[in-house]
Every structure is written in structure tokens, then in C-alpha cells.
Image (tube, rainbow, N blue to C red; front, side, top):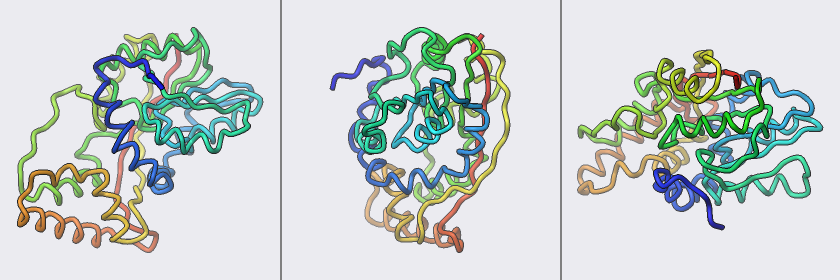
Length: 279
């Protein structure tokens, strides 16, 4: 399938539609479980009612989209994502449903119909747009006046133990370059003032922000968590000599062991719950 994308999002398409997306699809249950503690708050913010038409941006393997369509009752839910491997997993649950659908799309430029949706939501799926204003302008165009916007986005790296702890172990004492301000990535929506500026410029009301803190699950035990982490952050080992690589892996295992709980390997995480309306 040919996907209409903004050229600036080409790298994201390559990542999510190939190796990274394949890994996420293969580990779908673990990825969904890792974030599921945030779902109730996100759906509460979305305020989905019977008959609503819902858009889930960056839907991944579809657990939030499925929850949304259940709340929408006689309404509909559409999940969009760049990753065809993840969408293939999501589509299994949509088979035979007239109310639930998935489309491979770049939401920054996809030609949604004007006012097509009553609710737009996203669980950690809108931080990777190359042009945040253009993306949210497109989403605003697709949202009816007064329609609701609900986003879950990570707070700063410094507030997310899972990121700091795991990357510290894997960098093995090296200093790694920081991404430029505003660059697509997991913490690109960490600054409320910057997010508010983007959303209001795009045609949404001044957003509200609620700070959430939940444990993030990485697997039932250290071996499973190590495999999971290396699938996500293994790029940090690229180019290391054998001695440094061994040291990094030993540090990772020690860190995972320190975070083993009765319920599995878990780290603290912090997110913003962002709510707004189309104006």
C-alpha cells in the first residue's frame, strides 16, 4: 500500500513500518501492558459517548481504539498509524466489525473529511510529528467544532525513571548527544507552554494539563525485560567494542534486577494528560 506522508516524516515511516514496527507487533501484549495503567485516565479525558465518531492517532496494535469503540456504542472508531505490522495485529480484532476500522496513514497530512470526528485521542502517539503545528491543524480540520482532544504524552526525560535508568545503563559511561529542541521524539511534548502554543495555533482551545505518574511494566522477569529493552533501546549498543558492550549489558541486567517486583520488572513513569476542544 502507498501511504501519503509528509516527506519530513519519511524516517518515521521507515522505522515504524519495518524493524521497529515489526518488533512492536511481535511484542504487542507486552507493549500494551506496559502502558495500560494510563488508559482509564485517557479515556476519561476523551469523554466518549454513545454515537461519537472517534479517531485514535498512533493507535499501534489497537487496544485503546478497541476500548474507544466500546464506549462509543452506536458510534465508530478509526485507528491510524504508520506501522503496517502493528495495524495487522490491530485488524484481527476489527474483523467483521462495522464500527471499528484501521488505516495506515500519516495523520499530519491524511485527507480526513472536514469535521469527521467528535473525539480525537492519542496515547503517546503524537510526539513524533515532524511539524507539530501542521499535524494538529490537520487534526483540527478533521474535528467538528466543539469536538474533544485527549492526549497522553511523556513529561520530561528527567521525570521518567524508565528512560533515565535504562539509557544510563546502556550508554556505559558515554556522553550521548541530546536531540535539538522541538525534534520529534518521546519527550517533544514535555513542555506545557510549547504544547499550548502549538494547539492554540492549530485551532484548539487552550489545553489543560494533568500530571500522571504510573509504574511502567517491562516484563515478568529480568530475561524477558532484557529482551524487551534491547528491542527498544538496542541502538545504544551499536558500534561498541566487545568490552564496552559487555559492561553495558551487565549494567542493564543489574538495573533490571533492582527493579524486579512481585508483579514483574517495573519502572516509574510520568506523563501529561492533555485535554482541549476544537474552536
